[in-house]
View 1 (cartoon, helix red, strand yellow):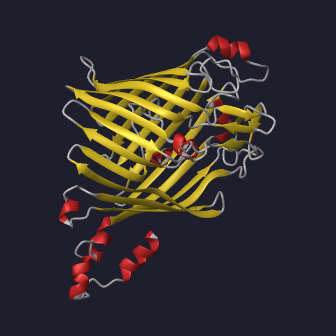
View 2 (tube, one colour):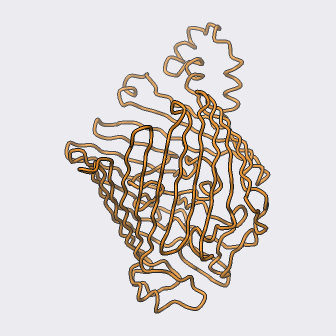
View 3 (cartoon, one colour):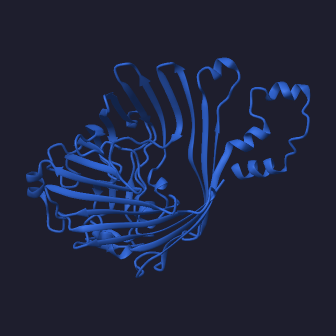
Length: 439
């Protein structure tokens, strides 16, 4: 749709004088010249070869080879006055992708929503949108919205870690606090790793698998009582932002086994209650953050059902600081505590994945700018001392001009065990390059 529109714009003569009737009709809509200025986007080519190859996957030499065109447009009507007074905004973002790994061309609507303020104290956003909140840097507790870790692990831009949701978001503001309420009628899970591009540990087979994996992932049906609800209340206390979070819906990953013989997994019901705080750290300077969440596994509150994920507590502490000469450092410490751990151990059977009661994860981000801030060198590390595995993410980004950007990076996975989060990906080490032209 956007490509057709773009081609029409390029062929339209803006010197044509419309009739009086057409001028009246168009007065409430943007003119062609305005529309052409509203459309922005980028064209990008990306390639990601694997270091050593992986014969388990569909193509063992690479897992990323694609060309992408993204177009986006924002429209804020100025007429009629009754509508303009409510600050309306319509936004659209779509991607045309030539995926040479999957050998197909696909189009995805990334965002398409309308935003309006029916009252001075209320905003309403309806449609497909990217939802996010919380304090973590690539770590999430109360951010319950879907993710695409497949894109994250193969070298696509970080923008594609977040999966859009078809939702309604209602924001409220008062002098005491602000609040967001999100209703998600259509369940959208995390993009699953299926073994086609990345090999992974299949707990039903008890080994690493690739494209031969044939798990059946059963999603919740579409019906009103399956609508997911997320909310937060937040306000500033001086320089500190404090928030309380709540969610009722489903796990975004298939954390339940419905039928082991049929290799059928499902998404159990989940509720989350949490809180977060973020602000300056006295004496040391920099920004500190903290977040906590209680994950209530609604279909296995006792922890006795070994086929469904136990309830858990999650804790996150973070700190980041800017230093002279365009240097920034950030560290995080994350802990996941399995509740009813004694029941989990008691009901475990031979072949089940071993788990610790407390899983720990540390992250380090180092970012440095060079060449008048046109070259960014960054290094992000995940390290789990309990799982004994690592994910390394070095990256160089050169902003050659206002339009051209070149990125090169890598995803390196190390682990002692095949079943841990990063250890299972050890055969998927990859280098990636992206060349982008923005307009």
